Image 1 (tube, rainbow, N blue to C red):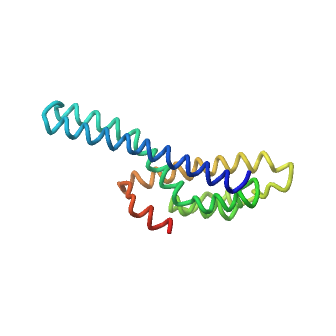
Image 2 (image 1 turned 120 degrees about the vertical axis):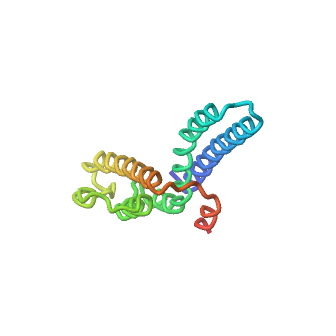
Image 3 (image 1 turned 60 degrees about the vertical axis):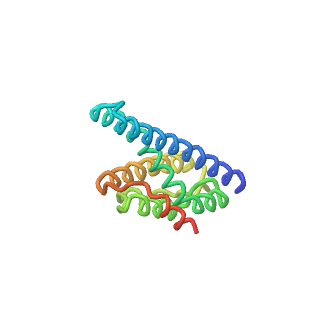
Length: 157
């Protein structure tokens, strides 16, 4: 897989997530307008906004992770078929703000050089990714943070 292919994939994924986020924002604006014009009761408004929020939060989280880690992912994919262990651990700390469980640090190569470890590397990479996303979502819930586009553009520069 070439860097251009990875860049293109990440760019298209970011565009798709951005479109989903725009749709959610348009829905929120429409609901707000309908409530202010008394076309919806406050209860109906709250129920519908909750649905939109449930759809938008995973999109916001994924977009944030993608934008923050794009260059790192492109570099690692260019270097080899697997993310380097140090990169995975760094991603875990950066995304979640927590240290990962000790078993993650021990006994796994993540190097892709050994045929016997290939499936283990891929499976652990997927498990680590899922764990990082879950921890990021949990941290976001606890902090009550909202998506901030200005911080994304600052970090990319």
